[in-house]
Image (cartoon, rainbow, N blue to C red; front, side, top):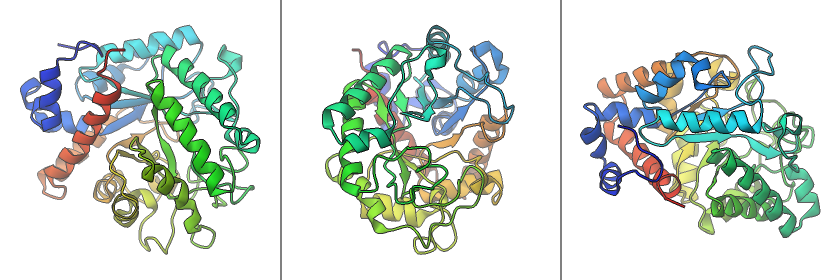
Length: 374
């Protein structure tokens, strides 16, 4: 039986949050919990275009998908987004496949990082850099509201934004040059990230603050290379996270794959328990969901096997493992990741209680945003 967003039984939901619902709904509760921790990218303008996708949702119970307008491995403009009408149909069909509502995510930051382009019938969106230069609360709130309303019409419930990185290196190929940062000033970034997140939340769109602990000072791109910020990163880059968390921010945070020897001499941030559990959770007091940046990026994939990356991410404290399938494409990635996590639990390398903690956080966020009738 499948449930709509507004017909999901309250009793069933309460059981989920207690950690016992999956056993009532499925013979294998561990599979349900593992599935909810996986978010993938996929090819196709319809569900039918990618045969493995429906199985990933129905049988493996993945918790979310991420949408793109351009297919990097195939160097093709055909991916998931063709027009507003097509995209709304695709996202509705995706939810129809799911027993537990999906996170449907997109990078709709504005400016140059825009999956919904005017050339395909979507409204233009201002960049964070432009809004930061204006430094006007009404402008930022208005831009965020327009984005949120558009996403809502398209059945997209999670925006991988706002960017909380400081523009400390304007030549940064992945932040500064793309005008993704509001400012080099922590106060400006904090203010506009907070306005954006609050506006999304008020419209029922889940914001995701990124890229922890700060990608703004890097000189290389984690999509392509190992990225060492040991000499360039400063503690000021934590200020937007600290400020928002102190003000009550509890929606997701996305990690960066940057390496900083002063934070962890062995592992990049996404795979570092010192950064995710130590710095973000213990030091800054964050209690929400932590999402990895794409684990197929070269900064991780070129240095760690899939099993090692997953094991380290889980040990670090990552709740949702993101496989964007847009650096490389692997239609079996959800099956592989699920099998690896199950094996790690079966071999007592990962404690089942560790899976429960992430699952409960995920279900609490879904209860807040996706199970409520508007």
